[in-house]
Length: 128
Image (tube, rainbow, N blue to C red; front, side):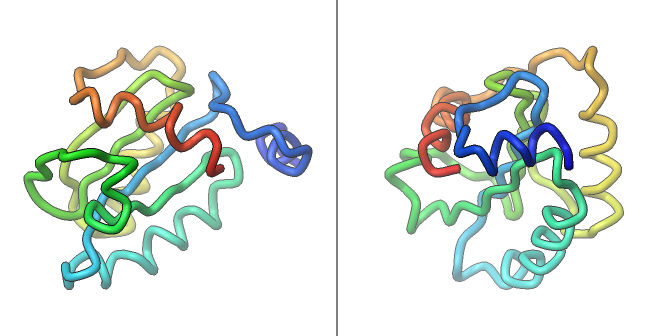
């Protein structure tokens, strides 16, 4: 069993420094998001070491605030509280899988993100 899975099973939900948090920002009315959901869930099932969260920018507006999303789907990826990626992604399994694989490198630098996005690991910590 992975260390991340053991922490989850033990009830530990705070962001962990070595653990990836992958957040997909979408909207229920977006056909592309609806089609991408199964792919996102498949990626989540295939990577026990990461946490995957699907957020609807309208239904979950209390969590994401009044953030302007350029297009859907948008991913925000963190290692612990450090933002590694924030942007629109092609809704294709291979593209997202390659993006996530590249972000697993320990030496990745943080990227600049809006404050509403930067606070997601802490905000989501209680929900995970």
